[in-house]
Length: 289
Image 1 (tube, one colour):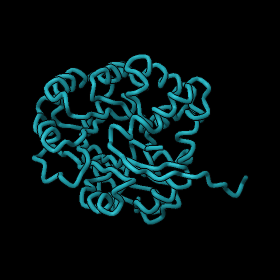
Image 2: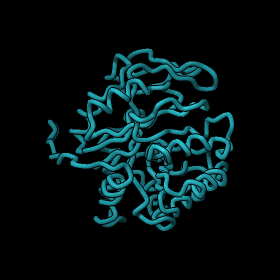
Image 3: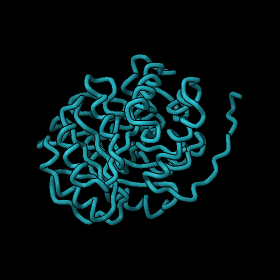
């Protein structure tokens, strides 16, 4: 399987609402003006490392992963450059766009736009990012504002740069009004949708997330199963569930065919992110079995 949406950081140094985000230890972070459990409590030193990720991936049978970025974690370009160099087969990484001219992104596979957090919300004003992605053949990972607020401006950029691969994150902010308009953008040939954060968005319902499965089916009917990819939003969602639980609720559902699950978990992301030679991931029995 391939995880299309997760996070890594060597040191958390982000901002939210103009206030700092930083580790307090024990997996907790100061998140603006409140304390949040940002990572599982066993990540005691605040380091969300690739070594810990790979151990979790091995146990959960996840062969490849795509590292996205977020302002609340701070720019992790330097760390992710190292990660990409050391793990070229199993890991793909994104450089972070911060509303200033991009530096060299030749080391990255993609560029992340935290669109819902931009000061200038009109995506046509960020043409340079799409132009750079087109020039370097990078993909763009983008988390849009809720609903259809930025759909029109992203559609314009998709039409202007039809060969740029675009992955819409957080499953279109599926629990907000108008989320289907984000999914409809995947009717364009190089636009895909990844489900990173879907268990967060349906957290009030909790495992096995029947409404999340229904949303996947609705998205399938809008853009086709060949445009949808699984993502976990590791490690934030691992404060509520295990890594395996972030995908097996879909695997256990009788509402999708085996072929649809194969597309969702592996084939779509393999094609979009250009993974090759991923290892086979054997099942590892745990001590409660």
